[in-house]
Length: 229
Length: 229
Image (tube, rainbow over all chains, first blue to last red):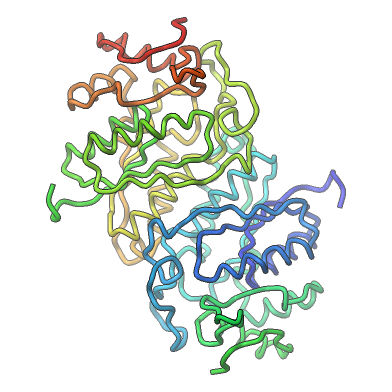
């Protein structure tokens, strides 16, 4: 990595998807500014995973920004609402956090503009996911348009690119991509509702999608689940 | 105010504009959820003004959310960069905070969706302002479109309205509107660079625009300025 390589701000939750998106950004030659948000989420364990990943990928800087979204609530991840354990359904589940990716991309945009970066990476995918509206391609495209109008850089003719390289990949393809890039999937954390012992619960949507991804990719799953459904 | 009146989330910086926008929302019959962001801004004195205003307007709730944007810097309000004092110019000044209104509207959107509100108010105006890109009507319109794509409420057919009632008003018209609504402009705080004694500096863009507004409206200016240019 040299000073002449471009900077990218990467949203790094600590999950398998954001880890793979960050590894892809690095493989494409970007120097990484990794952004994680400590939103007082139920699964704050993911922040330790984000630290491990930022370190493994040699991020130039990793900011873990405190932003207490429990002030607003409205989600099983930020309020006293049970995390569903019966399997991925058709509807948008209660683990949806209102406007989360809009908030996170806005923060990434602010950092990118301040740092002189033009590229943002986010690990959303719209195939093996929970149906969150702010993971869909039309949302990402709309945010890219907004970013141009919202910023000094944008109005001065230097628009931002929002990269969502996993957009059309299945979880199995994402797990395979992580393996191909040589980053240890065991560094990442997916579970919404960790056990007291710090294990993946095995039953929440996020655990089920993770498990399915490794299985379908024919890869060893490095995760310790409390329960295998 | 009764339970049957709709809720609105109002971005309340504590300045004259956001105070007037909030007073207009109340006059239109909304119950107010007031949101201020403690972004470690140079002029954190404005947060005390926001508290006074939320109280005077009988807000149902006032959240002052800590979000330390000095982690990113890039602005005279969030980094060790001097606040310009020589008058409002043509270019976007260094007091521009990268992506600030995108971040603030995203947070307001998150709260609105969690609380079941469909209306957001923001006190931007694009006449007597510092040329910030995220104060322009095209930005506000784009954000409204994004909000529909970004949220569960939006995709389920309950879009959000972003109200920017001061959009086309001069600062004098805003000062006159505050007076008409019977809210004391002396509650508000505009200065970017308060003196050690807690006075408005009188020389920053924000002080100059405030001063000009009261003067052109023919209203007594309740502000104590350290210097009158």
